[in-house]
Amino acid sequence: MAQGIARIGKDRYRTAIEVGGRALVADEPPVLGGQGAGFAPYDLLLASLGACTAITLRMYANRKGWPLESVEVSLRLHGQEERRIDRRLAIVGLDADQQARLADIAERTPVTLTLKAGLPIDTSLA
Image (cartoon, rainbow, N blue to C red; front, side, top):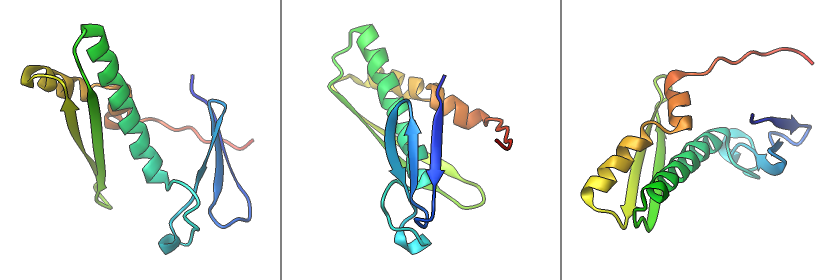
């Protein structure tokens, strides 16, 4: 199961994150009072969805033996109150039917399903 830690000190909003034994940095952009030293939280959300989509589509194409050359997943987060994500797939190397099948598969990737269903979060003090 996935596990992670995020730590913030007195460095404005710069946050050290460790997930799966790998480190990365999150921060807010200067316009929001950060230093832009890392990914903004919603950037990380889009990155997760994009990576899951690309990886799942590659796995599916490989399993089918399809000649997939590349997949580009473009994502855009919209809205303040009612948020939504627009996802656009650019698929190279497949015919129209195969591309349509991958677009259908994209709607059922693990991160897609998690985001669409919502996810309970239990918070407690250490």
